[in-house]
Image 1 (cartoon, helix red, strand yellow):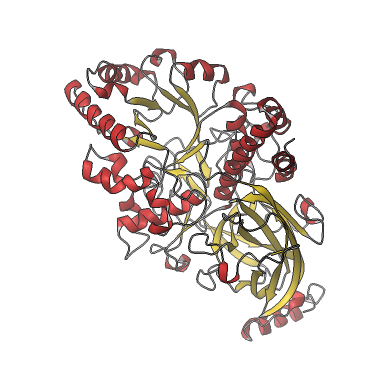
Image 2 (cartoon, rainbow, N blue to C red):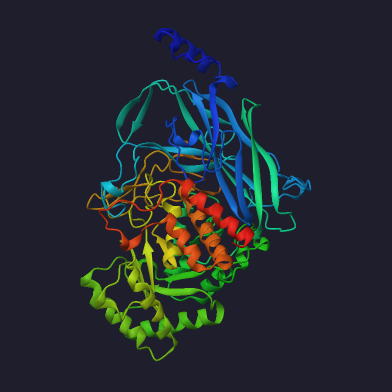
Length: 622
């Protein structure tokens, strides 16, 4: 359809009215352009002149080129630019990849299962309108370290293709952009007519677990459909490097989720065990440890509850027998917080605490000896709470029974006054790197918490896509075992702020956290989006599923990158690989002042270029 942008005003309104009344039966001409980009970018809705459009790490202007190992998930994006009259019937498909030499096909009757979604999964990107960017606080230090683009329509939620039509499912309608009125937090804003806009799609391609599929080059193509007809085909070349990405993670991303009672309201008809499995499976496929929000972590010792949870701790829950398929098959969870966010599950007296500590330690020694279990003491303690922590730690460490082995963790940086009490420090302002080796020699550890530019990637919506990828490289470079994210399903506003426990309009309003000091963050605490929305029925996607986000996908990419770094280290030695990692992450953690700029790349291409070098080392041995 010819653009109406040059028509007189009355004529263009009449034409658009006819389109709407007639069911908006647009033609393929409404698609202006189609291009591809990797998983390390957020392409804003109206950024139609993006620098990556002509060429980027996976796109040469004509072809998509992908590389990876067996058991690796490759995420990439298709950006469909649509003119101002919108488009109808948009959807994607991808042909089964065919090995260029042997003719072996991945898929078809022998499709590799990736959860319940197949080995290729499609999503449409949902955009949130950020008018008021997060201000400098614990998300980033100063204007120097702020993301370069913090306002506009930012993609984050990824809506599966089988969601309800009209709610992000296929086929997708992109409405006209003519002078839309947008209502946001009681503010009415006029969005001017624009020449065109982007509709992003996300594709996850899970490379085979089965190494009987030959390594080498495979050919495929992505088809872009409009109104039931193929508008465009993009050829795809995929190289499977002859090595296997380990199922087991050598570093942890520990992510908390709301309790099942709270989440149950979003999934009517499902019981707590079913909801737990839904989110556990989604998290495990993204290589994160989703622990802390379940009854077992927040209750006094109860052997029956622990036995019910045990399949997650021995890995049997993550097997095809339980319905799980994908990365991490058979791999147990690695972390177990006791008394999440400081709940007094051990009791309050010396006798109670020592008795309960004995129970936890004995159970884990006999049932899950490989799990790192610990008592979550107090959330973000200050000096006024040190005496309480030291007293309770003293009771545990002087325990004559096995409970003296119970480790204690706090979400704060190292404090000299707690050096005898605490075993795991979890800092929200960056790890003090010079302390890591000494603490590990004592059997202790130093982790980091949430997101804090420029020292490490931020969790806010306005952060770059690679903020959460970079943290995997930072963990590898400095030998940090764990990164903790405080919340992932913060779908109800936090109780201490002015919105105290109101239901969030999670698909419409970007502000998700605000405290009593009016410090706030867009997107904070949200890595998953609800597939059902009983509180706002107009936002219901009709899926019993925890839907992922671009941020979650980049956490997975960082976890996979960590494993690639480790595999390359086995071939070329730690000195060489650490030096290569330093070419990407020049500085991080307390090597950077909080008022300084960011010293790690802000775009995915830099990580992808080094990833290619790592794949070459893994493939060729040097």
